[in-house]
Length: 331
Ligand code: OGA
Ligand code: NI
Image 1 (cartoon, rainbow, N blue to C red):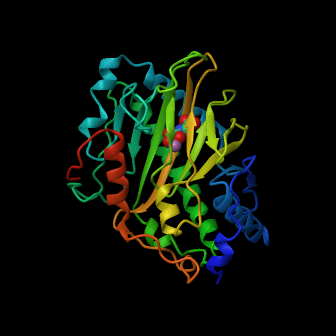
Image 2: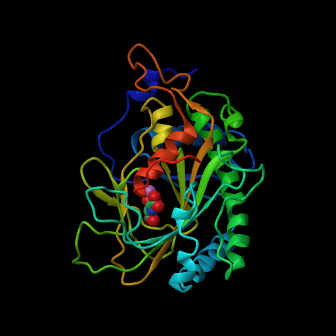
C-alpha cells in the first residue's frame, strides 16, 4: 500500500496549467490504462485539484440537450421559476435567483441564477418515503426532468468510475468506495450567468471565489465562452472550455477524507463575454451516513490525522445552509 509520505511530499505551491487526462481505455478496461491514468489523477489531485477528462464516454448530444433544456428553463417567466424557489426545499433543490447564492462572504452575492436537482436516490434523514423524489420541477417544462434524469444517471456512472480511479491512485482497492456509493448525495446544477461589463464591481461576479463542498465536481462548460478561473496559489489561471472534455475538481469533503493529501482548489467564474453563459456542474458526494475519517494510507507519523470524523451528509448540508444564508434545519 502507498504510504503517506509518498502522497504528500510532492505538493508544489503553484501550477501553471490544468492537466488533461484521457479516459479512453479506462471505460473498456484496456490493460495498463488504469495504472497510467491513476498516476496522472493522483498527481493532479495532489498538486492542482483540477483536471480535464477527455473521452469520458458521455455522448455530446446528451450534453447539448441538457444545455438546451437549461436555456429554456431560464427563459421561463420569473414567477414560474420563483414558484420552485430553493428555500422551499430543505435539501436545496429548485431555483436560485440572481444574487441569492453567496459563495464568497466578502462579496455581495453571485451574479447567476441556477437550478438544482438533488439525487432522487439519496437517503436524507427527513425524507418521508423511500424512493420519494424531493426535487422541485417546473410544471411548465416537463422536458427539464426528462433530460436531467437521464444526464444525472450518465454523469453519476462517470463519477463512480472516477472514485475507482481515485481509489487506485491512493493505492486502495478499486472498489474501496463502492459501499459508500449505493445512495450517494449528489447535486446536478445548471448555472446561468448573465454577461457582466468588463469594468464592474469586483464584489459582484458570476460566482465568487470558493471551494466546492462534496467529493468532486464534474463540470460541463458552454462551448466558446471562457469564464472559469482557478487559483494556483499566486494568481488566477483560466480554465477555458475544451471541446469534448469535462472539468473535474476535488472538493472539500475529499480533501478532508484524504487528510489534505488532495487539494480542493479555489475557483470563480466571471462572464465578460458579452453573452449569457451556462455551465452544468455535477457535485458528487457519498452516502449521507458515511463517516468521513482519514482514508487508509493517508495518516502516518509524519502526517498525523488532522480532522475529527464527520458524517458526510451533515457536513455538506451545513455548508449549503451557510452559502444560502439559511439557519440549519432538520432535513
Ligand atoms: C460552481 C462553479 C463554475 C462555472 O457552480 O460551483 O464553480 O464555471 N461553477 O460555472
Ligand atoms: Ni465551484
